[in-house]
Length: 139
Ligand code: NI
View 1 (cartoon, rainbow, N blue to C red):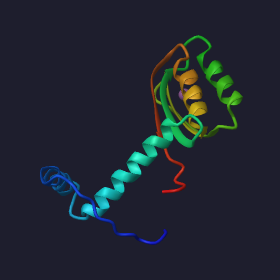
View 2: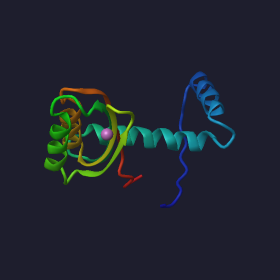
View 3: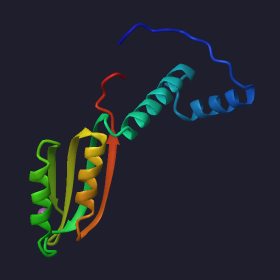
């Protein structure tokens, strides 16, 4: 971690009062400085993941019926196609029909979204979600 720098912030007293209430809800370990740092990191991560060329990581969680037509084959084909961005995959057989898959992706934000859209848009995928985050650099 680099050097700690102090700076002052001018803020409307009512807004500061609301901020202090917010900090209080986050537990005794939190103080204003920690809360501000968390919010700054959150804003930076949000800005990074929204920028198409930024290097990010993401997880795709999806549930599908492996019996549904040639779904397993299609998903497998996609995963081989994007082997450079798919870092790891977890497969759980939920019951006799349903599978849960969690994939960890790493790449440019636009690539991660393209891969996620291709996977989740495959006919027969019952539910899925992409969660994106930072690689942790520059934070
Ligand atoms: Ni399975």
